[in-house]
Length: 514
Image (cartoon, rainbow, N blue to C red; front, side, top):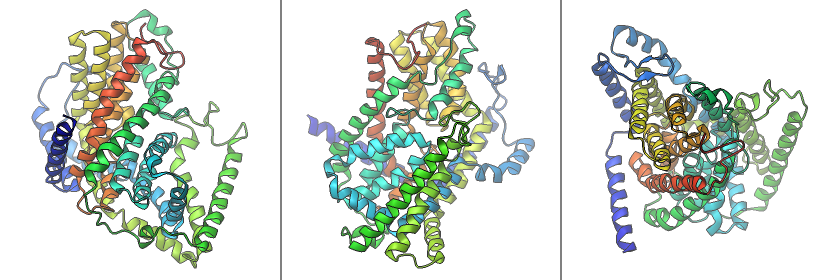
């Protein structure tokens, strides 16, 4: 029976992959979606809607992006929409430092040394754990952990796409999981939840304070669930399914060589020492009470602190330092021109992504300007409230509505600012606490990150896949990640409901009901 079910699932995923790969090139697809949004905005611009926009307290209005005023506004913002596209700067700056570390040979040697004392069987859970921990550094996991996942699996003789998938699942699918250390997302969502609570007409709403760690116990426990789900699916389903996919990408020769020379070992230890020295000096700058890395409230990890805003430049320096050290010690770098050449090689590999980022940024910009995403969110929230279902089913509904909306709106904070302002007051009327609703939202927001091409980093993951399998496309990545997404949304929902049934606290100062 299991073999039959596996065969059906495998055929379905193959269908998804073939169908997805028949879609236009990702850049062209975003261009087509851009045109579709313009046309839809024109069609629905004259339709009267009853949904109230929480930002204006007026009925939501679809903006006609083909009107002369909106077209003029778009052209005036086109360049800004591109250069302010969040993943663009993050990827380029981080890849400059990673490029030096990679082309000097430091990363390759590091991977080979890690594999020398790490069991192949434990690579998957270890990789997912690192991916979850990377949430501390905001979006760093996308440009750091995911490509390393492919490289580590490849060096271990396992399929690199399975490594990319496991890392992607941990970084993005498990975005709301935290391994004991809170991420910058916690205070950000809590602040938005607090704002939504104030919109409630209930008298007790005035006395409700949302703790930034109101989901801390749940998200920490969730990290173990994510590791188990990712481990089983990667090793028992994904890797066997893609084992016959030919690796034909343009790989570096050093990636194919698994031996470590004495020169490489010596250079690695010098580079590791420079990295540790950099880390120690940096930690010393964090210790003073008036450290410039702290925000006005004296917090280092707050979402508005200089430290959290400087994560990407710090990653650049954190890998540039050992990369240069390793390069000179191993003689792969002879002068500063070799360092610049390494950075240039890194940018060469990003050229395709930059093209995709341009069209993706333009689509996301006009989609936001049209208010179509807002309409979808409000329609879904209103439908859920009208059903008046039991608490557990209603909370599960919040998860599925959030997961659906996440397919169209990528930003976790933007979605919660919109959905939360509608759902939280309604749920409070039903006696369901904001802490419980926020936890539900986090599950839905994370579960479908890994299957939507509209997630800003999705095209970048396709580029990482193409390094190993040239014909990788949107369909390839979606078909690989779909089993993770389905498992996450189902099992994580059950996990939250168990917290409710067993009365396990969601976090500090959190409740399930009012």
